[in-house]
Image 1 (cartoon, rainbow, N blue to C red):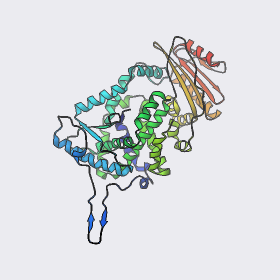
Image 2: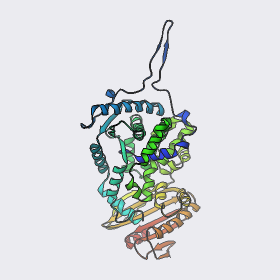
Image 3: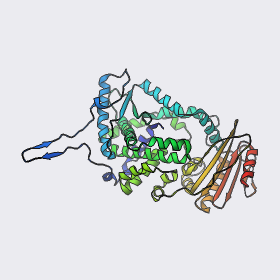
Image 4: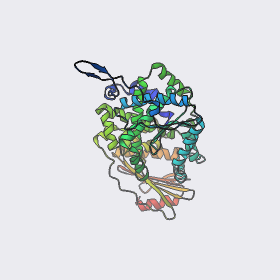
Length: 455
């Protein structure tokens, strides 16, 4: 996992900082590196407080094109931020983090290479087919290129937990206030990774989990760093904080602004919703609650969206896995949308209040994605918390099928509703608090799945 700090968390912090940390500051700081006094009968010795890590003590390399005095100045500034982060997060670095400073060309190339490494072409082609089927992505959009453009536009510095290295672009005139906030955010990642080694667990969830559990864990990691970013921003000189805000307004985000609404929301999710999650835990039990949560990260986005459910240990309801098999089709993946995924699915269908209501009744879900050439089939089983929740979501799915997916020709079929007037073919059935949703570019696949599910 490459934890990348885009401009998104900075904008979130600058927009919301006035109220997000009220009443919690006392729980988020300890004295670290402060002066101490030793007293004997004859003398008193005062040890000067440590205010920075010496530049030469910070490991890492610089691009050859960067002047030595510029690199030294940046490392001196980062040395100060390191100590500030330790104090705010109430954890010491186990070792001084590695800082790599790159010139503009080298930084851009490094970001592009690492984003490309993370983007699996086959996986993205499958996601592109699913998103187009569900009416979330224009079929003409190249998802891989969009994400490559989006991430390379947004990255302003990042921590790479695989290399245990923080990478920042050079600033010839010294680190700007906006860069300072970003570096503080990334240093939190480096610090918590040293203590909690979150990357292996995240990778395991991303590869073998539900998908929703990986999103829940990412919200913890980014929420922790974004919360501390708030603390750092509040402690800045007001002029520097204002300068950071002005700098963020000039940041280019054309690709982000042109991305689908749901994608913009999803990019902000781990920072914005993770921030609220972290703030809730800290408000309940202080920073120790965050430390303990790294030992048992959220297993669903529901637990992030409603932190009280995490505190209570409320787990997803039991839901049998789907066992549909379509002859001639490849079963690409079996995952869960999660509460947040349902929210994203219906983003352009419902008003905000209706959207929150429809998604919040999530009890559990699982889907199968099948591919066959250019065709896709999506088989989804959903369990609501109550019958009323299932009714609300069913109505929302009917509207989504018509308005966003272009399904037509609806008629009652069996106990559900079948859209068979064009492509895609969609079938929706509610049985008490359970929902089945099947969609495909091939009507025969829908009929086959229905038969296997006996609906």
